[in-house]
Length: 466
Image (cartoon, rainbow, N blue to C red; front, side, top):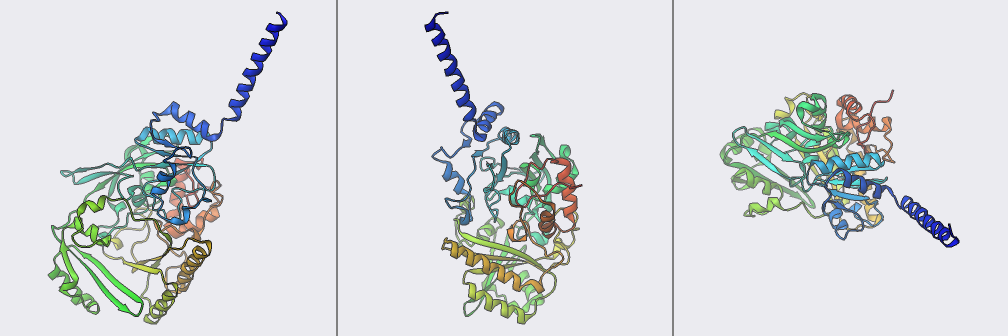
């Protein structure tokens, strides 16, 4: 071999080695994930990375709590705008093999941002493209995809609170099947997943167990016309709204209210008769006459807010309520929802689904504080005021545990930080608040179907510790 040929060989070899070295050093977790994804699914126009011009638009589109729309908020390595089950399967497989956490976003209404923010490397499975609703009128059933409109995935898996719950229970009480992708990328329906997992995802928080693609619901009957009302009572700067919906005529409603709640002084002029579909606009506080197409519009604009919840077992003394109003005036932007229970809700056993808040509850409270100024000082002040109001209510709400509603997510109850390690003691605290005695069964199901705790986040269901 001549000297020139030797030099050429050495130069070629050096170039090859340098190329290999460069390739290895450039294989970041994201690049490995993308390569894996392309090998396991057709990746056409479903993956958005920070290099895409649409990345922030898609990320912020369903981020309704503006506390998380800051430059310093951790961003995902990628957003997978899944269009079918194969995209979900590939994401799970490739995230798992590259030690990347998954966050699952249906509607983006997670109050603490757990569906789109994490403190460790993560990708988002965004379900907005999986949004079909297929109705079978003969069976009186409907298949509803997790990305449909509001974000059915999170709504249903947390309980599915609705305006007819006193008549028909929650959404989870009417779910008869579901399709889920588990930690091994298997697609399962009710039969193949088994009754334990089917029980767990109906109110136990689906994101702890897999990615739920679709739900099958048993539809319920409603009359052709319903009656709604909104009675406003004001005193100085505190306003009380009594908002209700009745599956019947105005005449019948007035008769019942006069008999059971005469203090409301409900009048015919307070009541409005309309088809059920129009009541969805009423509850959304839309003016009468708003076109029905408005229900298809994306969710409300993003705001800064903090929410908390409580359950009330016994009547609250009038003097306490008067003191509460005075405290709320100090907060300026605070309001509370008191949702009455009873009816069908008290007939369903607490163990029938993971949602345990049944008989014995007079009503549920949501404390909701919203504001405009996004400065750290303003955020801290409003969050602390929310805590102060809830602390004031401590003697008058449930205890041991102090119950909370999962879909009014509250990190103050307890959260695993960093989120890649689930500590059982912390999980037990928030788990018993959300699920009471059902927490232990949820842990057993989690241990069985996801023993490696792949589907985890700050308030996920933990696996058993031995």
